[in-house]
Image (cartoon, rainbow, N blue to C red; front, side, top):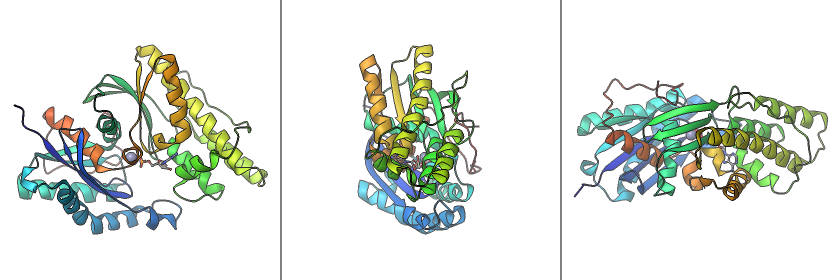
Length: 332
Ligand code: KG4
Ligand code: ZN
């Protein structure tokens, strides 16, 4: 009988220090997330240098807590998967250095893992039967990618943002209208009290690319020109137009590739309006997948899951592994 495989995942690409033990790529035994949101809140966004220092302070405890909560000894671990990009260089380096040290000291395989592959893999944890091929729309603070997941380790980018990531637009809109950081969940909540009655611009390209800087700027200008405009209506209108753009491109890709399985991933996929609109596509025969909220935003379980599939495919990193802040979906 096949032995179980246990992967230790380590994530430190932005403002969450996280470690997790995942069994066979799908079963989360622990997922410890130390969020720095409270620390960065006062600055209205993530301050890279402060993030790095806090990762250094937290990482050792986070990893040992993950092992303890999973009730597993380090020698039972089959491999160590760590995010090596994309992300903030100083933040990434903390996780990469820690994982390299562990791998060297314990003589365990090291698997440098792409953060975006992690977001995709979060779906494998929530949906135990989900298997490639499928389409995945990755919408987070740093990324907006429409990707064809051909196999567990083969990806093709079909479209991406030409400027701001969706989450970036949510955060900026929230900051300008005074909702604070991180803006996504705050816009999400306020939008529920409003109506999408305000007209905002939508961007179209001939291919499957996205653009969100136009709508972001339009909301900001509108707010400055008409400060007593109803903020809830503004949030609802913003969410509606953004969602339409996301759905249009996703459907175009689904039709082109004749794919009926669509997964959402990344922090913005926690948005209740976006989810509801995508779920509505089930009426048209699509199957919609999205991770549970805690697996949408940055966490190490998703890294351990993505790392597991790379481990099976034979990927091994050596001690020359370095942080790659602008790593692409393909891993180059
Ligand atoms: O995936 P993530 O944790 O980090 C990156 O890899 O970027 O995503 C963080 C982003 C932030 O922009 C945050 O505002 C957004 O996800 N976000 C949301 C919601 N929850 C988090 N955006 C819209 N609605 C939400 N409920
Ligand atoms: Zn992320």
